[in-house]
Amino acid sequence: MEIEGLGIPTRIPAVEYEVKRPNVDKKQAEKIILDLIIQENTRELRFNNLEGQAVIYEQKSVSPKADEIELSLDLVYIPVWEVKGKRNSLEINAYNSSVLEEPMDEDAEFL
Image (cartoon, rainbow, N blue to C red):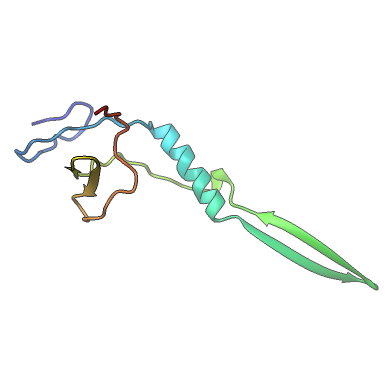
C-alpha cells in the first residue's frame, strides 16, 4: 500500500490503523525548533571589571543566532497504540514503549 504525499512507497502492517495528517507544517516546525534551541543555549554572563578604584558590573545575554544553526527536518510517522478505557484513554509510542504525555490528535469526544 502506498500513502499519498510520501516520496518512497511505505509498507504498513495489515492491522487496523489510521494515518493522521500533520497539524504543523515544515516551516512552523523549523521555527519552533529554532526558538527552543536558542532559548536552551542562551546564557547570562556577568563580568566584574576593576577600573581604578571603581568596580564595574556588566551583565550580558549571549545566544546563538538563527543563521548559525543548521537544521535538517524530515517528517517521520511513528506507530502509536491508543488504549481506551471507560473514562480515559492513553497513547503509547509503539516504537520505544513510552507513554505519550500529549495526545497525538486533538479530537473532542462527547459522552
